[in-house]
Length: 86
Image (tube, rainbow, N blue to C red; front, side, top):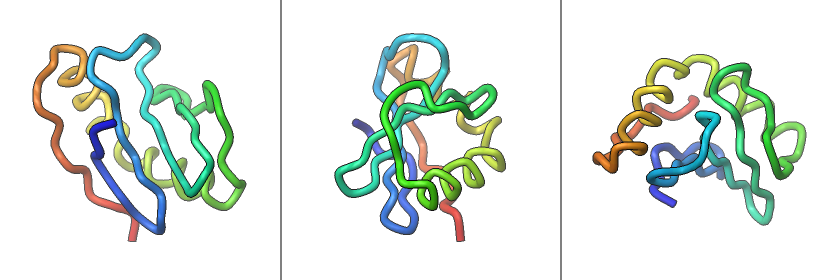
């Protein structure tokens, strides 16, 4: 999975040419989740509540960038890093 961000032990990434709806993947230790960009709902998987809260906080401030990343990934273009949560 191409990594686009990393913060507090959480890795965020997107797969090239992934299925709809637009989403990103978050990994924290042994936990994994796919999170929809529009509405920030968990599509599959599970993260601990604190990690999920951090991911949602991060994604809510970078929604436009995530949608641009999704468009790039769908057309097999290079992904760019997104600023981490601080």
